[in-house]
Length: 120
Length: 277
View (cartoon, rainbow over the protein chains, first blue to last red):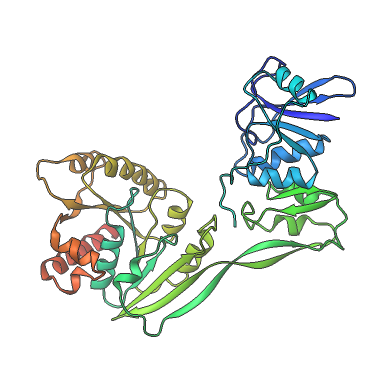
């Protein structure tokens, strides 16, 4: 199973990024082999639709769970469409978040902000 | 001649200046491009013979039968208006910029562009002035299609009431302007945003001049001092007066009843005409 996090730096000691769409890095952790992979978020400087593009990156990577502070409604639509489960991050390192997730201690993220675009 | 009235800061008197200016010009057209909150039509109080027309923008419509899931459209869209889920594109209408690129790039013709209603344009007459207002639907992200439709009604001498700020909607509104009237007030905030639109109109290389509204204290030379630095004069100064405030609050035009104010706006028009030469 692949787990994703939005991070500020490329290390397991990093804090998580408060934003999703314009996060600096994404961390992908593979529970099968314990591998951690960091990539620069290609949507970081997008002129618009950053949440959608970031969510697409996760979907293309085959992510099944996302640990994050907050999500906009457009990103949620993409993630839900691909059955990615979202969990509320705690203000600790990526490693602590991962450990807590595996221990089943993270709550599901169920409230979303309406995003920065008007929605109908 | 097309005269655009803009201000940067909201509430300096764009609509006051543009409605009264259009009112004193013979057979003019007044165009309200502040389509998120068009209120100019209130002052041209005549609902007889009102004409309304819907405004549309284009959105892609995806034929699931024809789509082969090649992802070309999703990868093409630089705005991320399309996501790729379960082997098919998913559209985000409010992100889409209506560029039509996805339709062109689709190898199987699965995408066609369809009309999507974003607002209305309404036209009526007040005396000899043609009054045009754009009204953007609530919640719609982009005002450009409505502004662009409003500007199609340009006729004779036109006065364009622009939205506040200096963003895309303002740029769209001054696209066809021959002259820009920059309305400001003697406040720090007024000056700050005025500088932003001076930069904008200079970039567009459109001749411009200043109207200083709500003038109260002669010792306050904040705007005059700035105007000198760009080698300009103030075209007219409008006093801060209870009579004007009352007229505006009652939704009527001061140039209909006050001779001095009518003369002041005539002076403004002459100076604009000179500035265009």
